[in-house]
Image (cartoon, rainbow, N blue to C red; front, side, top):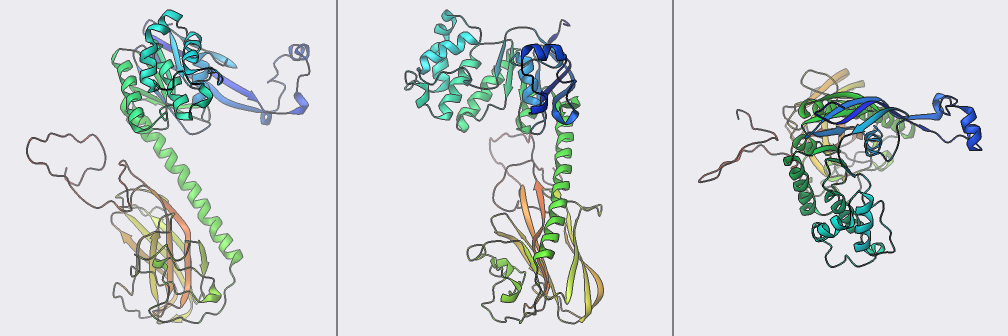
Length: 476
């Protein structure tokens, strides 16, 4: 091992055998005589968790590993910790190692927390004298002074995990492996765990950190490796690797949302029974902004607009669907970015254009175009139409395109449902598509509510601050 290296992962692969009756070894002898049992299996009978993974972690480095579920992150840490063996390749570690992977895996439920601390500490390489010396600190860090002599089976899941974390962290290893174990208590306890990890970092310990919390990875790690389907995609500085990973996640979401949009259109077409509608005129007519939803035969009046938005969601659930007479039909809905490309994932503050391609079987002179944006709870985030905005209809013949240009999509991070409609001024529906098109917004900040209002912060007096991230206002 090179002098400066703490961990060397050399072309590590790990394969698991899928359950298959036809290739089950009946005896140890048959397994040995059969040779490599993986070689006898067809490709569809093997799951490759890791595929030729190589990396070097320097002594004193905090090295992050990111990737989606099933990417091989936990398998890699188990191989480094020595709890499982690679199919091929090798992982070498220099120094004492402690793994925060399966907290409390060695705890016995029938005995007390005190006894489990000693047993677990010995399993992690401490002597009885070392455990006795650190016992009070272990219990205090876990915040279990009142319950340490109670049987572990009586602990809540949070107490159980905190005790496991505390024992592992007090082993004082040279190499610390952490696998998504920071959800071990309330927010204050998580901060205490992060402070302890930061203390390890300051003391020059080597840390291998696996997490889905990208902001935490960016803050703690010196370098990051992105695993995808068991293969290394890129290793490098955190902002570059995390940015590449987020781009890939957004691309996957784009594909999923696009496929969902097409599927919902097909389902709506197969379920729809378009019947003649009679207009329901009056101030009591339900609007889409009020959460109104009814089959075509019940003559809904989906006047997409802002009036009544404060009442929506309570009277009726938000149910995706499509209805209308189709005298004017919405043939296609597209969400476009600033370059005119169709997308389904937008960053908070990005421009978005809602484009509707229409066709009218016969000329019509009474028409209103409307759009509405709802969150998954059916809350109307925004709704408007051409009638509300004082556009007077002239004529609509044949094919046409309508665009709603939003210069800044200032919605907080989340999934949103789009309503699009064309109807008469009296709310008689030509075509209404409710929630068939969905999109996501992403954000680098964690603000709450519905919309991100344009704002700045101002400070007077002896207030000193520094922006470390988030969305900076224009010109800052």
